[in-house]
Image (cartoon, rainbow, N blue to C red; front, side):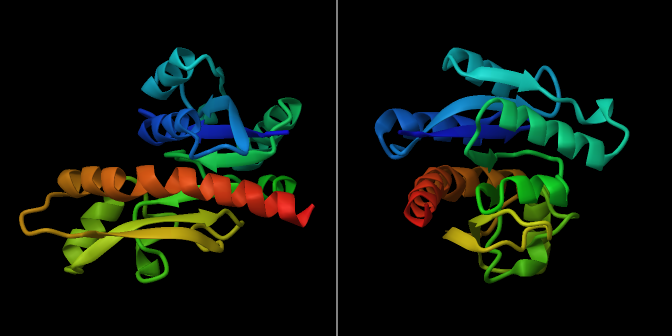
Length: 204
């Protein structure tokens, strides 16, 4: 029986599309994406879900007074939908410890930097284009993406997969962001989903 996968999004959903394509092509074969949850309405990720025939929900962050209340609401929504695996794919809200505990070792996040090599590009202040701006300012020659298990400490969970991408002369944050997505994120995120599901099945 396939695991039910929920993908949490906040924007365009390019990583969601990579996951949908990977399931269709058989890269993800042990799980099925059954739910997409967005932290805000009107984002294109919701259109991607609709086009793929996947159930979607909007759980607005601003509708909740605290991150604790929001985390509980998200946890309850996923439990109601019998979710086994949670993928944070461009999800811009850091959920609290109670959510991490409810899905312990079953939540993964893709981060647009090499956290094993450059952990300084991770943490609460580093997300989206800000990561690539910091990479370019630092002068490092390689960057990439990391898929890691989510724990209460932001971007510090066990690493499942990483892939390097060269930083090229003339790169802008936007150009680098696109290259990291195409050459790393879209490749290793689906692979990591399959690894996580297989590992969780072996433990049970």
